[in-house]
Structure formats: structure tokens, C-alpha cells
Image (cartoon, rainbow, N blue to C red; front, side):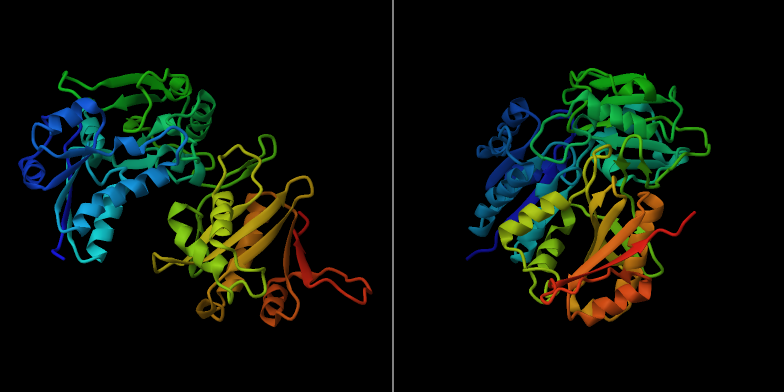
Length: 438
């Protein structure tokens, strides 16, 4: 079978004027062109460059998870590549900016032995710098997707520019919505107020998609009023909100995690130990989650390994909840501080604020269970529970005859709960640690 080829190109934000000659040549010379663009007008323009342009927009459906949509897009582009054809994926803006499908398609094509590459394009970020007169090198510039900023409590530097993307989807975890409501944006405003004064200037920005001169939207507001801006195009998939540079000042709970008893808020952040990093669980940890929860050896003293459907449900439930919700769990992926790839999972489950307690759990592959990592992780989980989440007790349960687990909990300072004189004791043992007074 002849080798296929895949090239994902960016056509820029403004119709016809941002595309470069290299991207245009890949479009005109391809056997098939797939279009992931903003509207039918742009698709019609692409058809003036190539006779066989296939739209990726029909994969979007109301109520359908974008995760499934993007996977279907990838398979659609790879089908002719696998048949030996030269395929071009043409995407608005930059094909590698807030675009999962091009990255995934290129990675899969290369893994299957096909030639695959990406050609950059003018992104919304590039337009923002030009339209708003921002030089990211002057004071520094931070970029976060709005929901990620809310869910993972990113550390920010209020003396530098802050750009938040996809503000219209702020707080969405369903991957099925096209927008979220004012309540979500107001929560985003509350988080920003922890770092900026209420009258700090904000620009709600959308890059232009036609050559009309100037930005499509450059609505100016303050941190206090930004959450109430109308949604008529001022929040959406490829917009960025850009608070101007702030005067350096002390920030309250910047990048921290806490539990506010009044709002019942549990904020997730990254934690570190001497050798490890505990990061809030995210979509990219799906494969690790599936491996650990589906492995009989790892789950031997925990529970039965989960089926594929069980893993899917458990992973969806384990992802962090929106800040402000009455969170019942806090799951983390575990990686070595010197490396990048996560190898384990840890978390606090069944968080009960009424009783002030939570269950701690750790899942590590066999080759990492004799490194002392379990002790490091369990100590950090109790610290998070007591100091960050304001709980009073952490407990651990495991199957009897698990000597390594018993050695672990004893070494950290857990005490076994008294057992009854039951002739048939339960298969589980429970250990607990209480927060020290004061």
C-alpha cells in the first residue's frame, strides 16, 4: 500500500488575508482537503482553491461530547491517508492552538508510518497582540484556558499580562455546551478579584474573521463588570480576555488551595514533595487511569479491576468539579519531580465536611511500590486534608493480609480502629489519623 501524507495547515483568522504561500500550496496540491473553519463562507472560499473540500463541521452535534467529535474528525482525515492519498487539513487560525484533532491526527499518522507535518498560521493570539498593542516581551504574558484557570487554580503573576481563552465556555466540564451562563463567569470574576483590584481594566476580545479593519470585538470593562458583559459574540471559542498589566502587589491565596467553609469551596492546585509532583487529575491522565484501575495486580488489595465502561464512569467522576461546588473528592496524578510523565494516582475520596473527614487512596504500579513513594504521597495527602481542605480526620482502608500497606500507614502515623470480637471479621481494615490540636 502506498504511503499517505497528512499536512495540517493554518489559514489564519481573517478570511483570505492571513494565509501564507506554503499553506496555500499544500491545499492546492492535496488529493483531499478537510476544512475545520469558522463558517460556511470560509469553506466556500477554500473551494475556490481545491475542488474536493470536505467539511468537518457536520461532526458537531447538539449535546454531543466534543471529545467524540474530535476523534471522529481524526478518523475522517486519516482514512484517505491510510489509503495512500495526500491529505490537507485546513484549520482557521493556527492548527496547533486550541485544536486537539490536528495534533492527534499528526501523531497517529506518524505512528503508522505516514509523513505528517503542521504548517503554522496566524492565531487569535497574534491578532490580539496587534489589535490591542500588547508586546508580550515587555512585562511577560501568561495564557490559560478559562476553565483550566478556574479548576486548577493556576499561579499567576499580577505584574504581567494575563490572557484567558474561551471565556464563553468558562467552567464547562461536559464538553457538550457551546457556552456557559453568567454564574460561571461571575465565579471567574471572583477568582480574578483575588489577584486584581475591582477596577482593574479588562478587554473582552475576539479576533476578526473578515477584513473589516480593527478587531471584531474589543469590549473594555473592569474585573468587577467583566462577568456581566453580554454574550453577543463577546465570549466564545476563539476569544481571549486580556487584563492589562497590574501593578505588583501582594495577592491573596495566589496559586493556593483552600476550603472556605462559607462557600464550601475546594480549590485544586499542584502540590510537591521532596521527589514528587501531585497534579490535579486532567483529561490527559485517562490512559494512566485506565491502566491502573484495570490492572489486577495493582488492584489486588483494593477492589476488583474495573471494566472499560467502569473506567469511563470512574474517570468522569474523578475529574475535578467546578470550584464552588460541594466537592466530594480530590484526585491527583503523581509524577517524579525530575520527569514529566505521571506514573501513579492519589486522592482524597468521600470528603465529608459535616464530619470533617476523608478517605485517602494511592494506586502505584508494582515497579514504584518499593521506592518509598507511598509514604511520601500519604504524608502529603494528610497535609492537604488538614491544612488545605480544613478537615479533621483522614482514614485508609485496605484488604487484610496486605503487610506492605500496614507498614506504610503505621510509618506515617495512622492508628488502627478497634475491632469487635466478631468471629467473621470484615475483609477490610481501617486506619485513621486525626489532625493535631491547635
